[in-house]
Length: 226
Image (cartoon, rainbow, N blue to C red; front, side):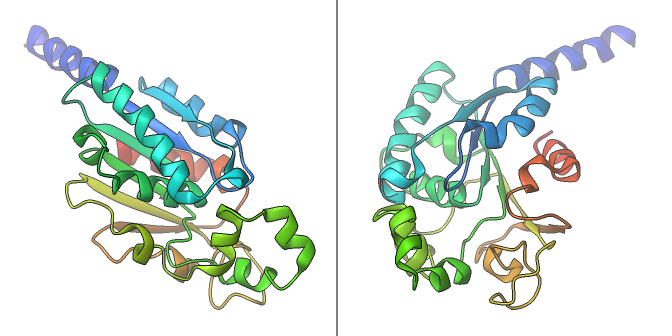
């Protein structure tokens, strides 16, 4: 009996050891934004790729295309193994663009996905800020402009593939932004984080920038992926 339990443990450990989790930060972010989640996922035995990109300097679509090339490399190293994702804010849109790219490997479309504070329905706050010239200059003419103008990203990039194993959306509700209606994290309203395809949805008391360092969010993410 002990040998059987040990064998099951080794098999499960090997399965996780072969799988990758790709972390994707949001707008004006960097690898440091996902460092806390990366550290905890590494402790759980995952292979973690903390994917970095210059968020202001290209369109969401082009960022997604660059992500595709990284995913192809991972798939070639581990053919048939699912690639999982944890994305924050605009990183969720970059992921959405990548997963709908024609060259995206199937391995990236069969794993689990955690979307943290994703502006899936656009961002009313970003659109409101667009009236100020200084803000427009800071956000630049690429993804920043898209965030300040688009109202529904599914119209641009399509839906998350039906082949995805499971999707979890974690929204923040510790915000006091009078521009936004209902619960919000100060930047994104909870109502803007809803997918139009099947998914699990959780709300936690956290702000938009700090949510990726929230212990509850980390524990929920780890449990969902495990």
